[in-house]
Image 1 (cartoon, rainbow, N blue to C red):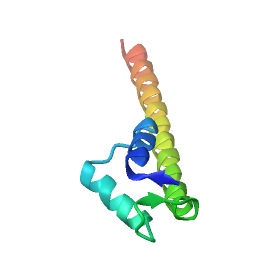
Image 2: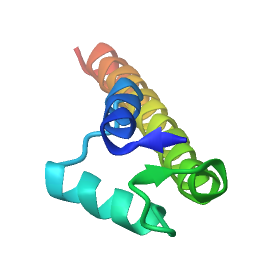
Image 3: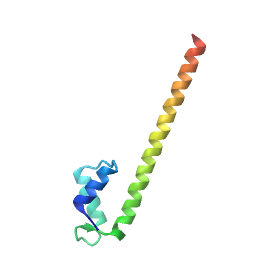
Image 4: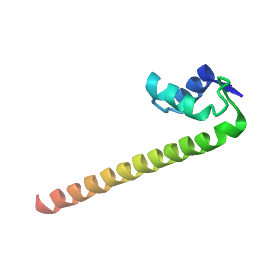
Length: 83
């Protein structure tokens, strides 16, 4: 089981930036039985969603990084041919 304050530490360690209000809302949504703890069966759907979001964020950052490399290469190539 995960207590509310533990979940905050886990999300911060995973570089998931949530405001206090967002974190509380997430915990209220996840805590289906209202016992103040996220049980394994309650965590799985949200955990999967968080992981999916992290993967998408990483892929986007990687794609943007590659796009920047390509733009720089094109810019260098154009300047090299013009000068």
